[in-house]
Image 1 (cartoon, rainbow, N blue to C red):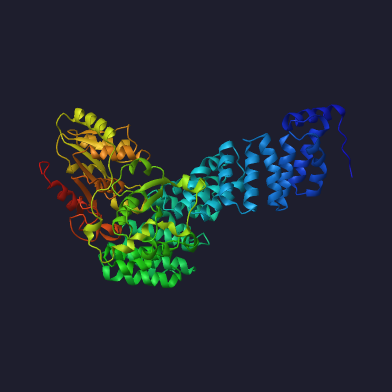
Image 2: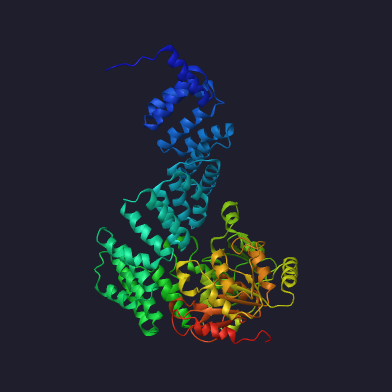
Length: 618
């Protein structure tokens, strides 16, 4: 065995470098370096032997405590790890490694909330530990806060350029129906590691989420020939074919393809239920859903889909049996269905009502408070949701308070387990209820913002009609609700001032539409961001003479505000949301919207003509 002897000069150079890195001088710096190396190789006895004396001789240096804390973590000694990392934290309170170590110690002690808070501080301070990122995502998923986790770690994952973490973020976003964001991370994972099968399939899913259905149709068959997981490829292929309207091909594959996973086969049968609705074969939809649930052997998303199908048919009691199974068992452990039972709601003096789904759905579901056995004058109802709701619900007519999800989860509070209720669970009270009960405006726009925007728009319009338009739903499920801006502008009176209500509107699309309708003045008000400034968005809508929109968040804000001249283009088939019912031009939910329905899938000519028939003088 050859022994390498350093020269005195080399040793001094290494000591100087280590001293600069670890904040101790001479031989001690090299010992700290050796201790870190021993910890990396899990030589725990050697770690303690090396670093123990330095922790006593240099107690104000953070590194001995970090090393001892890391050693305790390796031994799965949470209490001991907390003690050591607290010592380090007192010395270096903003150190990303210290914060990450403290977080892991809290996890070992089953102290999840403080652990996640420390992880967030660690990432903000610059911690880029892959293991910590994965642990944070896992914990937040168990807490039902996956989207918050993605927001927190996206910058870290982007910096790391890690294919596995990118793919994991894509899966989390897919499960949360955030398909646009998921597409980015699927493509990122593929770019970083294209040879991996799951990334190849992820890229295909990303193409579908980006609405590049023709590319999916082109690439899926060849991918089916090379991958082991043919089920997932076929599922993506079928979804794309359905959205392209190629129903005969979808039906043929669903009947003939040999799925190896029973759950994939169940998804295909669930997809057929959507196909039947698209084709107007309503009597075949429910049997297809039931078959899919029977095959899968568990409820989940298929059960929710059947529930909302029955809701649309006004079969509320039967529908709720399925809709109530929309959450996994883990969620129901924290917020059981029994909490929404009448005998519980009637006896509560305070309710924390937990938001679910997207902004538009939440606006619709808040009307359910009018049907529930809750005395809104005597019961304190606190709505817990996205912080963007805060300015929206100021002075609301439902008499509810608001609390952001971040504050709810991160601040200590005393709660009774039976006062947590999911908003959607109140839908059971629609059964045998007069539809008029839920109708009526409940949002109140900020008077100052309304006055400011109204003055601005009226000065621009000089007596011309002021019309707001929204035409696109960026999510995958919103594809069949969307239409080109050029088509929606055909409903607008000549010379009108057109206010853009479309978030993330394409400048190229607006420019092209302006060339076709040069008589219109199209205004994209940078003062209002429809995604982040919902209070401003509400005020903006309140200033408009008329709104023409697809079924998206804009329609729900108009309904909840009671806007008197809003026209909503409604698709036929499975993409018609359940609260609109299946027929009629009268709005059965808010009571003030004008609904213009397709009579043929993918054909907006009749609803467009229906909007045109409304006079601006009416």
